[in-house]
Amino acid sequence: FPHTVLSFSLFLFTIIINEDFYQVKACCSFNGPNFDKIEYILTASFNKQKMLEYNSTRGNWIGFTDYSIVASTFWNKDPLDRLERAMEIKLMCFDNRAFIQTIRNLSTTPTMRIKSVKQPDGRHPAVLVCSAYNFYPKQIQITWLRNDQEVTEGVRVSNIDVIPDGELYYQFHSYLEYTPTSGERISCMVEHVTLSEPRIIVWNNSLPEGEKTTIVVGLCGLIIGLVIFISGFIYHKKKYALYNSVHQGEEM
Image (cartoon, rainbow, N blue to C red):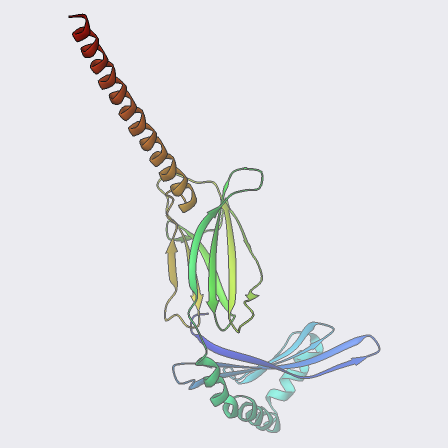
């Protein structure tokens, strides 16, 4: 995933006859700092079932049904088919490389955040959310880690679809529901085409900012109340002592 720079797909044609559905789709993947590595994939599907696939890296067709296996064997031996595929790669991939590089210049690195969220009914286990904001292009992957190992057991991970921000960029949220254990390290790993290597954000299990603010405000209120109480006590103590002194003087 992190090695793929950008890719785009093109539906060459779709045919619907009666209730049958036939579709051919081409995809160009551009890799490397100068997009010098290009992979071209051509797939054919019938009623949403994948039938055939051509991959320029392998340089041949693969069939997935009895009929398409026979067809792929025939096309792999046909020199004209190789010429057709080479022409498609030039027209759809190489001739569009400058355009794709322009799109890459719009790429932005995601802003990451991990925080705790409360269950609506206050239930446990705990729920963490790892969020990515303001990134482009939209392809992104978030993986949860426990003690630097991918989370696979004893938890529930849920993702929402990538959400457009309305101005080219996207956001993505992944939720982790788990039972906290003392001393463990929870983090989320983010992979995006703008990152040279995966980025890891570690969950700080100290109190959330909202709770910290509440505690600080409460302590400040307690201290202020204590200061007022002590000041009042000292004031009344001095006033009482002065009253006794004056009263004793009058008696004398």
